[in-house]
Image 1 (cartoon, one colour):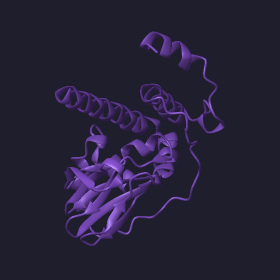
Image 2 (cartoon, one colour; image 1 turned 90 degrees about the vertical axis):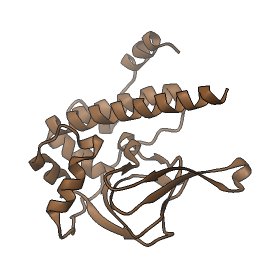
Image 3 (tube, helix red, strand yellow; image 1 turned 180 degrees about the horizontal axis):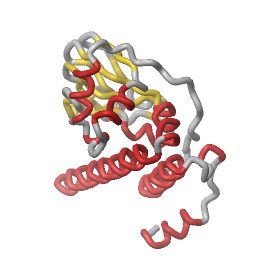
Length: 210
């Protein structure tokens, strides 16, 4: 399906109830999700559901704000807006060897690494072994695609050190973006750019192997 026909197809889509026009950024993330589904030919899409917000218990708000300022997803947000976003999350600590997320499991959480290193790996042929593909460190983000809806994790994340993270329920962020659309617009624009960059990187890697 080409881009032109994809646009026509999207214009004819019926929005799910959670993506009414009263929630413009749910509409935006729905259409981004649909475009990615076209690329990957995915048919199993999960709807956004509501959940209770978590309260953050991190003691050093200044340190968290410093880390989040360098996160690409929040690029363009003022310090106060970043503080507002941080207040929606909760700190989680992992010991070395702990699994943070598991490949193929359904997920609805978004993580930012505050301290420590996290190894990202995917299962090898016939799931015989795990193949490391990346190391995340301070300021790196894990699971940003969960903002598009609850879906299965594409990789496993394991703490290589003592790791502190800030984690959000994605619906908490989406509800906040509905109330603060100017913030939601910036974050969703950054998300679209990040996913596009990752797709391009993957395409180049595959070309080099052909």
